Length: 407
Ligand SMILES: Cc1cc2nc3c(=O)[nH]c(=O)nc-3n(C[C@H](O)[C@H](O)[C@H](O)COP(=O)(O)OP(=O)(O)OC[C@H]3O[C@@H](n4cnc5c(N)ncnc54)[C@H](O)[C@@H]3O)c2cc1C
Image (cartoon, rainbow, N blue to C red; front, top):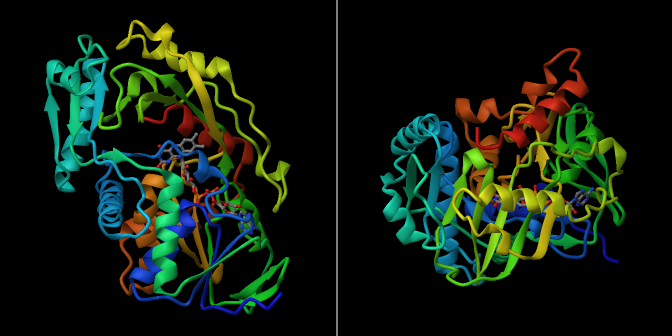
C-alpha cells in the first residue's frame, strides 16, 4: 500500500461530527485535510443509529445559535449538494403537561427569539391538526418551531463527506490511529496501522473512543458513553413523513414519523453507562441488546397523549453509545496542554443536530483571531484544570444529564 500523504490537518473519526468538521474546514477554504476512519465505511458507529431529530430550542443563546447554524447548513446541503442529507423541515411541537413546564418553555421561547428563531405558542386544537393521531387535551402549553425538522444521519455524513472531497479533502477508511506523536508540546502526527502520517493539527472526533484518543494525547477527559435506544414501529395509520417532530419533556419522550411508522425514543430514569476504560482503542464498545423493558416504558409514557398506546408494535430497535460529560456541554476546541490538538467530542446525544455548528466552532477555534467567550467555555481545559477530579462523581453527573435530558 502507498504511504498516506501527510496533511496539515488530520481528523480522527468518520462519523457525523468528523465529516461535518471536514466539510466546515473546506467551506472556509482549508482543504489540506485528511480524515481517518478505522471502519471500512463512514458513519459506521454511533451516527448509524441516530434518530436524526434537529431541534433549535436550547437553554442559552449561543447553543441556540449553534443549532440554527446547523439548520442553515442542512437546508443548503438539501438544496445544492449532490448527495442530500434527507433534511425534512417539518417543524417541531413541544408539549408541556404542567404550568411549571409551560413557564420553562416561555424561557426557551425568549432565548429562541433572541437568536431569531421563530417560535410560537399554538393551541391544543392546532397541535391536534398537526398530529391528528394524538390527544393534546391535557397539554398546558404547546410550542411550535417551524424551522426544526429531521434528517438521516448516515445520509448527512455522506453529504458532508462528498462535498468536502469535491473541494479537496481526503478520506481514508480502514485506518486505525494507534498513537499520537508530539514534540516539544506540539502535535506532529499520528501512528496508524498503515504507517505514520504527519500533521500540524489533530482533531479528535472519535465518538465513543474520544476518551481513548485523548488519553493518547496525555489528557484524561470525563467522556462517558451512555446507552441510548429508540424503536421504529410497524406501519401505522395516519403517520406520514411530513408530520412534525415532537418532544414531551415531562414524559422524557421524543418522536417523529419514519415513513409510515412511528419513531419513539426517550431518556429512561435508570441509565446504563460503560466506562471507556473497559474497551480498548480499536475495539467496538460493548454490544447492546435491545432492552424491551425500556421500549415498553416509552410506550407507557406516551399514554398521556395516545391512550391506544398498547397497539404500537416495535419493528426495530436502534441503539448506541453517545457520550455524555458531567456538565452536559460539548467539548470543542484546543487545549493549552498540547498545541495543535483540538477536541470535538462529548456529543451528549445531540451531535447530529449540532454537527454543522460544531464544525463552525472547530474552524473558529483554529483560525479565528478573536475567540468567543462561548467557544472558550467549551474548551477541554475546563475539565483539565480541576484538581483531584472524582471519576465516580463525574460518571454520576454524566448519567444525570442523560436522565434529565430535557431539563
Ligand atoms: C439511539 C440514538 C439516537 C440518537 N438520536 C439523535 C438525534 O435525534 N439527534 C441528534 O442530534 N443526535 C442523536 N444521537 C446522537 C448522535 O448520534 C451522536 O451525537 C453522533 O452520531 C456522534 O457522532 P460522532 O461523529 O461523534 O461519533 P461516531 O458516529 O461514533 O463516529 C466516531 C468515529 O470515530 C471512529 N474512530 C474511533 N476511534 C478511532 C481510531 N482510533 N482511529 C480511527 N477512527 C476511529 C469510529 O470508528 C467512529 O466511526 C443519537 C444517538 C443514538 C445512539
